[in-house]
Length: 325
Image (tube, rainbow, N blue to C red; front, side):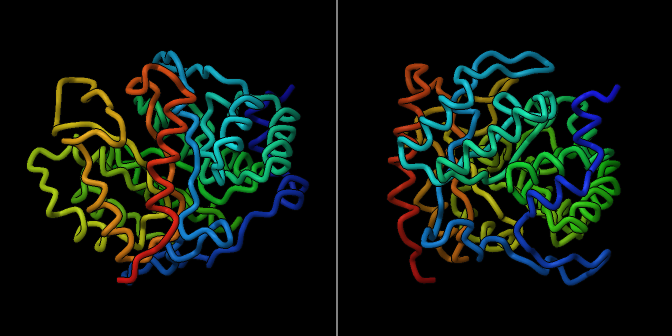
């Protein structure tokens, strides 16, 4: 008997036909010219220069080495995002993943469509967001992840790379995703091949696939770059801009901290990410992709509702327009 993960991995024609993904250019297998598409110039929500999505991390609770709990049910999460005015959600396995019954996934997708919410990107397993030793395993068997994304009518799947040995697997996974007009993205977090600007650029160029991009998160580079300087924010965004397809927004104060990283602070807190510089950079490349509130509830009196509300209010003033370059 097939389990749910195996069933998702079948890649049935019915799934592909019923949940066609947005059209993107098909990638060349190898090219020295860099990326041929730039999702930053394609707003996923008509009439929204920078649509805002709510990450499921905002409503997550306890985590172990293999799983993450969520403090909201899926309907409660949808109600929260819709009620506050979000344009979409970033979907994590704590709410829906490869472990979720297939029928329930279709019901959840229908619920989002009825609410008028889109999915910015998906991370259907626990290993990638936990960032454990198995985070790159998804690249060895990407089909279930692609099927999952198609169910939710989403064209971006977050994956993990832990070492240079994962690069050939990322290329193969990207090629398989391109055949279905889907993209792979990687968050720039610690202990990955994207933990700082220099390594991110090197990895993206090595993968060399126009449907492989990144989720930009300045708070991660602030925490993971020993010689971090705010003056580099704008030029770095301009250099890596063609690969930025989603922006995670959270905050922490100071550079590299103790093991486990520095605790997050409110988006409005001083001494952390200089978001004026961040958006100066994003405006300069005319970024029109997702802004995703990726902050946890810890800095907001452990209130998930407050964390979501204040993050939405903070980002709305930046997302409402695109300044001329």
